[in-house]
Structure formats: structure tokens, C-alpha cells
Length: 148
Image 1 (spheres, rainbow, N blue to C red):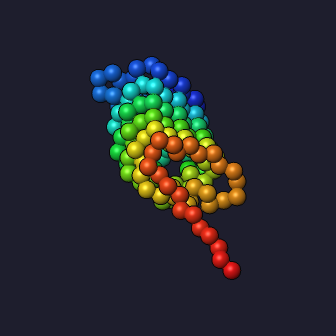
Image 2: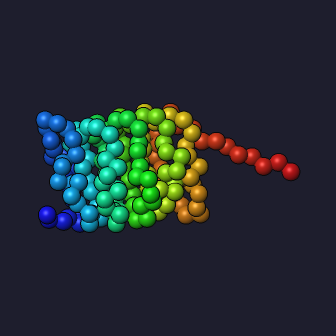
């Protein structure tokens, strides 16, 4: 089967009938970048995409109809640095170990979903700068104070 390194199919109205992720993606293992934004794709977060493609650095799934919990693979993806899942229908809490599973993530765009609860502290576990946009959700951050 052919192997892609970059896949950009933005605003292509993919899978009009079943609205699922294209099935050929389950056979891809060398992807570095994926943009499936604005396709009205539905279902749960395609965690297999991250699981199968350990070299993946860029994922854009913005403006689709993904819903449910935001599930991540059980083991770390050491390369993913940029992820946009904004403007979908994800809900519930973010995984507490998101920063451990995606340790090199420096941009995470979560806005316009239905996430709730605390923003996981694992997102800010290291000293590197991270850019997140979690607006238009019901997320909150705990504030820690030190006393002498």
C-alpha cells in the first residue's frame, strides 16, 4: 500500500455518506502532517492516527463534527508539536496525562468545543513555552499560591 508523508484534504467534503475518517488512513504509518479540517467528519477523535504515525508532527482537524471524549493513545507520541481540534463537538474532561502523552506539543488549539473541568497540569509540565487556546469551553485552571 502507498505511504504518504503529508496529507492535506481541507474543505473537500470527504466521506459524505458515513462522515468517517477515510479508511485508507488506517494503513498509513509514515505521516508527518495531516490536515482534514472543514470536512464535516464525525465520530470520535481518531486516536489511531496518532498511534500508527509516531513521526506525526502536525494535525489539523478543525471545523468538523468530531464528538465525545478526547481519547489519546496509551503511549507517548514523541514528535507531535502542533494540534488543532477547534470547532468540533468534543466534550468531557481533557485527559490528565495529555502532557505526558504529547510531551513536545507546543501549540494546542481546543477552542469552540464542549470541554469541561480543570485544564490538566501536565500540559505545562516542562519549561518550554506552550501556546494553547481553550476559549469557548468550560475549562478552568487551578491557581496555586505559596505562603511563607
